[in-house]
Length: 159
Image (tube, rainbow, N blue to C red; front, side):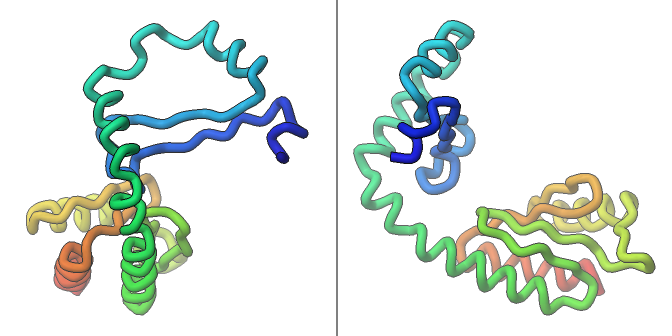
């Protein structure tokens, strides 16, 4: 109902996490029909590969199975967030997403790019990929086994 009251609003949703289609870059928008018509005029033709469209259709046909895992993912995120927050070398930000942002505690609370690059590379060398994002690190929430492995490896790197 709120969307009907706000014709200038556009709701954007992604299939990336819940539907496990991150590599396909599939999503959708909901908006007033006039606004959608205006957006259609500037949309590139063939902006989504046919394989990605097919993957989205398969995901939608199995949405009950895929969406049933959301509570488990949220629980894993919360456990990972708690464990990371307890590490004295890390400053951790709250998250409602499928990843957690951390900074290394340094004098003045600033992580140096060199430190972050070293941690990122050391984790990569052990088989765990994390993203160096400017002043911090982005850690993606995984399965229970992946999260345990990430925590163990991060602990070893930060010793």
